Image 1 (cartoon, rainbow, N blue to C red):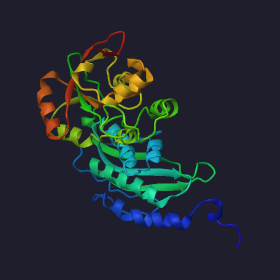
Image 2: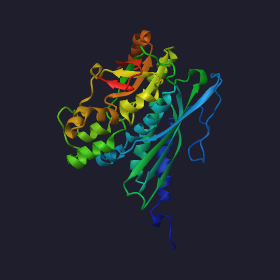
Image 3: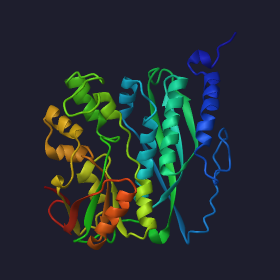
Image 4: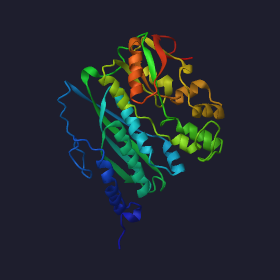
Length: 344
C-alpha cells in the first residue's frame, strides 16, 4: 500500500468518530435561529431581528492562553472550554450585546478523542451559561508542529445590540460609582507567570496542598472563568443605566479600566472594599511580587466592573444579587489625575 494521510500523523477516521460523538452535545446548544446542522462548510444563523430598531453585530475572539497546560497536567479537560467561551462572551457583553453564537478552533498534535470530547463538553456548557449556540468549529491535527498531547483553543463569538443601547463609557463622569463582580480565581490570565513561579521555581506539583487553599493547587488554578452575560443583560433589561463595563482580563486593573474611561476622568479603587481570594495572596507571597505587578497581571478577585450613577447603586446591587452575583461597591470616578487608576 502507498503512503496514507494516517501515516503522516493525521487520523481521518478518528476525526469522523469524534464528530459523531460531539454532534448531540453541540445540537443541545442550538437556538431556533440555527438553520444548519453540524458538518457543513459554514454555519447558517437567522439574522432577522425585528425587535431591534438598528441592530449592530458585536464580535469577539480570544483563547485561554497557557491555562491549557494546567488542564494537561491535571488530566482534566472538561472545563477549559468554559474558559474559551467566557473570554469571548464577557468581552462582547461589555458593549451591551447579547451573545448569539460561538465557534471554536482546536489545534492538536494528535487527536485524542476522549480529550477532545471533554473539551467540547466544556464549550457547550459555556454556551449554555451564556445562552448562545455552539454553531460550529474546527479541529485540526498538527503532527510534528505540536507535541502529540498538546492542544490549543481559539474561540469566536458574535452578539447583537441596538445601536442606541451600545455601552461605550462615553457618559462616565466624576461621582459615578464602580461595582465589582467577583471572579472565581485567576480566570484565564497570568498563567505564564503562575506556571513559572509554582512549577519552574518552586517545583510544586498540581497535587500540592497549600495553606489557605481548600483544594489541591491544580484544581484551584483550573477553576473556570465566570460568565457574566446573564447578570449584565438582566440589569439592562430591568432598565438600569450601566454607563460602562470593564472585563478584567490580561492587563488587570491598570490596563483594562482606562479602556472605558473618558479622557477627563480617573478611577479610585478601594482594595479593602472586597475580599481578595487567598490564591492571589499566595502568588504574591511565594513570588515576592510587587502589588502593582499583581494588579497589572491578574484580576485580583474582580472579573467584571460596572460604572453607574450613584443613585442607581442600591438598585443595581439588588438586581445583581438576585442574579446570583455577589456585587461589591469598590470605587468611584474622579477627575483626571496623574494616574488613570488609583488603588488604595
